[in-house]
Length: 326
Image 1: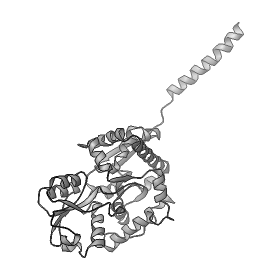
Image 2: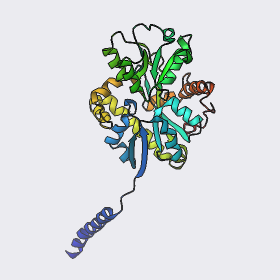
Image 3: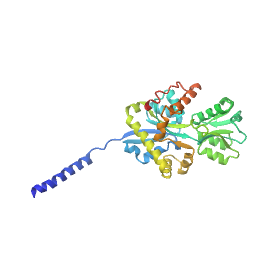
């Protein structure tokens, strides 16, 4: 009996000891990571990743900071106070070209109608903008969209138009709706609001006409990427999972996406999404394939060449910018 009892008790004691050790072992520390972006639906799937625990599962304690002043973004990367930054691709390229230590991670979305040039009824073509007052934020991604359209479909340069510089795109939309200007470059929700409330207002051109001009991308601080390649991969994976979740569960996803911003509702998100195309894993794989005619590298090179010609880039060599793609 004693022998049999010992056989029964010993495994139980060993199991208890193992369990005690498991409970007393220190939990693995998570990596503190900070990501920054402004209030824009294109970046909001990151809140899904946070809410669903995709960052936690990868051992990341993700802090998302909403920073509306995009003029500070380059400084944040230089200082290393943020490790990841989400903004439009052409500002990302300009920051890199002018010395910011950044590396491209992935393409997040493309504007396919969510940005546009709205004008009064008497302006029927881009050439009709001559001598008119146009409100816009030259720091916003839509500035590249506007200049591309102007160069492609008019005989004008921006010098032929009176530009009213605004602090952001929302302010530009409000200036138009209050009758202060003849036209404005704006994005949702102001774009739809202007078309609905201003008599005769119409969208002269939108990002649906130039879908490669406004793409949002995620970049990472160069030193951080070199020291923590596994974190870069995990953050990208979290984004892809979030996009998949959004596509499969839109109503639940829109609630999560809105919750990360102030004064943004799920209905606002749903409206914005209609003018956006989000890029998941397979989409990025296709965009990253340099063998395709319009790869992300080719699209970005057009941007770099454009801004180099305008004197706003110190270089148009994007080799290092795309170094994480191999």
